[in-house]
Image (cartoon, rainbow, N blue to C red; front, side):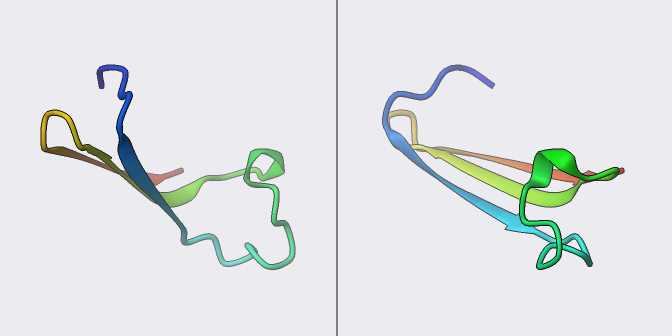
Length: 51
């Protein structure tokens, strides 16, 4: 994904213990969806990560 200067993002945390462990980087697994919209190029990048 190229660097984006003007855009928006949405992170949806799908981890079952998200309320108990709000810091996503301290967990043993990652389950999330990430959408990044590049407004300059009108491109949507979508990532689904399940570990």
